Length: 243
Image (cartoon, rainbow, N blue to C red; front, side, top):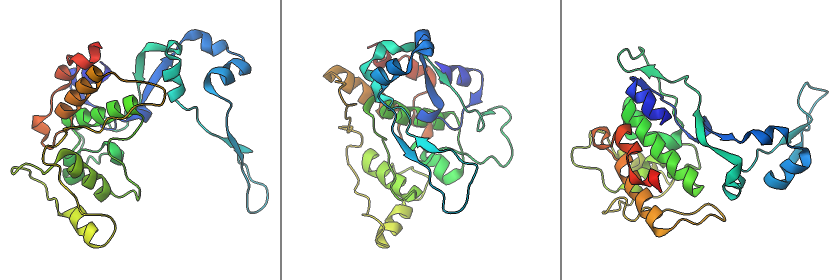
């Protein structure tokens, strides 16, 4: 609903990803003892910080973040509402900023953002689709090892299939990278998102109905052409949200 309200009011988020979608926890957690925190969320893993020369004003140790999948095992710890944050890339559609440079993370970047530096409402829908997949399955829909956008484009091509004839953007980038031996050439899936590779969060089972509905929703959100993606008004009306 948060992104729907932004779009309804004429604003683009511009950098939607799972790091900017926060769960609200129930109020009693604030008063938990250390023992209660460790019981439900696990004992923190730490590493000592070592410097190579002299004393420095740095933390003594690094603490690994809480594994958020533990909240799926104890769902009563969460409220039924979330908070969307980080509006540094947001803008009003009626008056977009000059020389706008999208700051979307690679894993959530839509094709038009890659090629045109354009992040509109349709790109928000694409990013939300990627985030929904990650939240529900525990894995990125599109991943990168070397941190190069060609890797993401390669995975998009393999997942969505061959771009439509009217696709306005070049597809040679990841092909040329393949020729350099960086990774394999793209292999198009003729049927696109069928079947979508949906996995499951550890210890959390999805029934067949939810898998089918999630795949249907993502197929409508993750499309090459921005104008072919569903709007946020259509997203929130999808039956997957009523499971």
